[in-house]
Image (cartoon, rainbow, N blue to C red; front, side, top):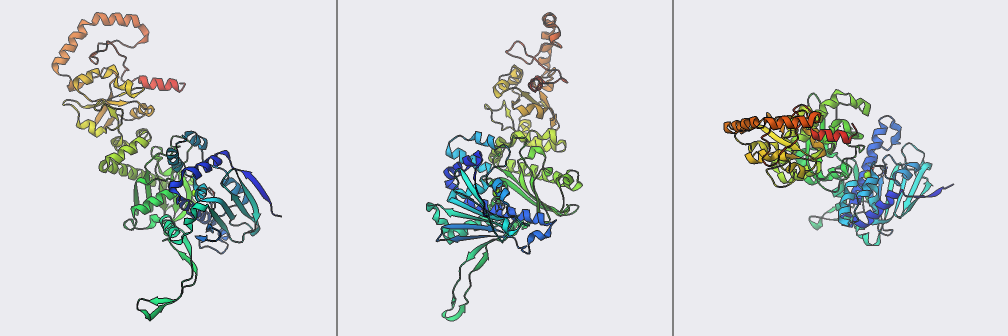
Length: 572
Ligand code: ADP
Ligand code: MG
């Protein structure tokens, strides 16, 4: 008996489909990237499973994806012999969105189409991109290792629901049939389709094949009198290199190919900001291809969001989101690691305490920091854009990764009294270059907001002396600064702490004058002390202020007032 059932899409899928069909028209052809990408993933998953059960190949171990058109029917079919799906899997994977934080994503949508299409790009539409060009999509699938009678047909017009039916499917894997909309029939054009397939499939590690019609016998270069070129029967023709991109020589790979591969693994719509591709031999033997995105994913600050690299062992896909190879503060990095040292049966648990993992993690971390240094040097504007997106993640670095503290510190950017705006553009090295004669410390203030920092009375003496102060007001800044005590052998000092020794910035005359004032104010100080009693530790005469009568400071070794506020807010 053929069982047909109607299912409603999960609410979010319905919304996503609406967005897909209404906002992605300027980027239509990406449906091919997504579907070919899924076919490649399905091949990867099959190879991985077959490591422990070779019979899954069912004597068909040549994994490939085939793309064909039927002009009469107006359809494009993308057919793979990968892992396939069972009925239950089809219902779940093609009817719901499994990503964490999906509802937050929908909360961020504005209704402004250009803004939203940007967001959707970052979210990744995957399979549902089929509905950009199709008004009906049919999926035929049969899971590897299952009986031919367990096939499933999934069909939907991309509106509220989809239908699943039991079918018989002798071949393993998935066929996606796109019934093109009337105004998308241009995709039936062989040349057009071929050029898109080329663009999106060259970096794919399995063969992408297109149907080539029969070519009759024809004249050779010498014309009708010369040799004939023999007829070519219709056949499946491989149209891509089918070589995993990272295994190729760097010099043979174009920027465009690197970017296409980036989009394949990240689901980003935009090009990457920068990347690094390295083959390492010696004690450890692996290849890394690491990308820094241009834009933070919409769920970057969601702690549950999966991150990490795609892990391969000897070119066999092992897992997505291997988080062991990147520290948390670099969680925005995407990429691939292909190790020749790890065993093929490596698990997340095994990765956890492996020397190989440690070594790769250290090396990959260094690489990313170097890539960022290079961008900062070569293209400050691009680096500034990077900083806007990811700066707050990088600020977690000094606390998490003491061994790279100095390097990370070099990448930080701050607002400062040198500029008249809240943009974080000042590097510690810039600050040091501008230091006054006699200044040997880097001064900063942390406050609730940029304006609170900028207008703090603590800055008065620094303004008077023309000494620059870094203005920090992000939540993470207090955390950062409690782990960053120096840079380039110069101490970082809060202007709100302790007795504020300005060192050689004060000349002898300044010091004399201060002393005189201190003596003159002794009576006032003891009266203030008496009236404030236990609420304060000490009352001192200060030379910090030029206009304000008084301010509160924190003792050298006490928690800063900003930290106290944070702790209170956290209920401590
Ligand atoms: P993603 O690829 O990011 O997981 P997609 O929307 O592209 O998201 O696909 C959703 C899911 O549908 C996949 O994770 C996979 O489980 C399943 N799927 C899609 N296409 C195929 C395919 N060709 N073969 C097997 N499973 C597939
Ligand atoms: Mg996908």
